[in-house]
Length: 174
Length: 333
Ligand code: SF4
Ligand code: SF4
Image (cartoon, rainbow over all chains, first blue to last red; front, side, top):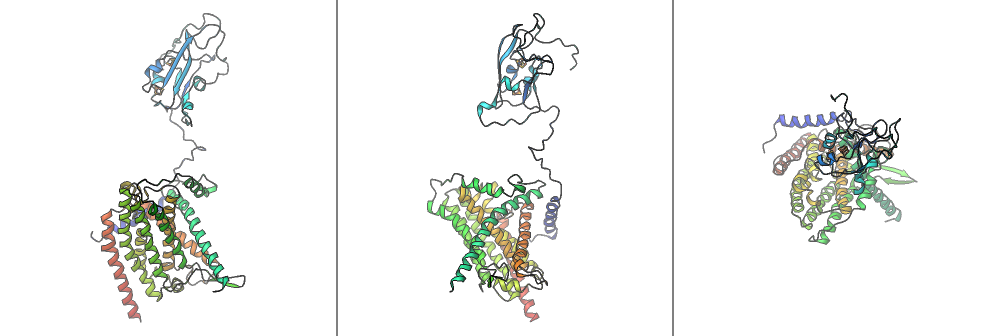
């Protein structure tokens, strides 16, 4: 090895100077549990099952999401609605709805497949668990809370009012 | 020998050992925080205010780690290696002076364990024991990465020890003594870093190689050797290697301060002896920062370049430095 030329020795000190300077920059660290980084609008976090304004569940138990899911993370079992015990508009509702968050790859295909926009991926990314069973999100954990003017399900409704599973779309631009 | 003197020595040794061990713990924190700042991060700040309990947490974690001894390892040597590594790092402190004398309870107490008249020789001798620990660790693990790490470190430490030892000669010649106390006292006017700047640079480089710090951390080059000589170590045995490395880092900083930066003295100012250890300590902290800073800046050397650098550049340079210093000293009378 030749004796390092002057230029190379200078580079060493330049490097030292750069690291020294960087000590006085503002740290980029985000102090996580206290400070949370905002997520982007189209962020795909934990799923929720949505409700209509009157409190009925949007999910009609059609299992399209389970069929679309590439990771086979969703399990749906449906049951019949009746006007005395109505969970969702139409004939059927999801009596069991489970997503295994250890399998889910957060691709959002379930959201795309859903005919009623019942399942959507929201911005919650804090999905830590210490137990495999806690990774299975059941319907109770996925359902959003009942809206202000709504009633909890099952509801008793007047007969013949909610006979369409998929609501009529008034303005199909969305 | 009077009993009081023995008690005094025991107490001083205990303080030094405690300093070494807590110094190690807090140096890890210091290093992590400083590295984090250089990398524009914050660093560990969760355990206790400013993260000051982080070393405690790390220690507890290491104690409860499972200790593994590989089935084919040489068990006796495997257990002995971390001890051999850590001991020299601790006993090296015996000759490093922290100050002159303080009067406590009517007794004049020297702020050093021993003012050996061959202090510098002792330093180099003790420092070179550590290589045995590393080679034995590498060999006894019966793991090829560990063995390669151990071999590298033996080659590296033996090569750089020469340059390191010769860089000590400059200050020895200027002070006309090998006793570290005399060398510090001889720097009461001007620090030896001024007349011996080259020796200081050589000392820093060879010192970094001697304690296996980046950019000379060949024996544990993670990318090539997984972890080098301590690849098979876990739990407290691993902690001992870690401890040896960090205590040696403090020791190298202390030696640098003693030989080149005026030890516990500030030029021209006569500070009271009681705060001399503090001055010494602050200087060590500054030199430690330099070591960390170098680690944060430079990538690791390639192994053949490392050897070439040691033998073809550092050694001739240090010899030339000794020669020039000797000539100047003779001409000035
Ligand atoms: S986000 Fe993708 S992987 Fe996760 S449940 Fe929906 S379809 Fe399955
Ligand atoms: S979430 Fe949507 S797609 Fe899945 S079962 Fe319910 S309605 Fe069907």
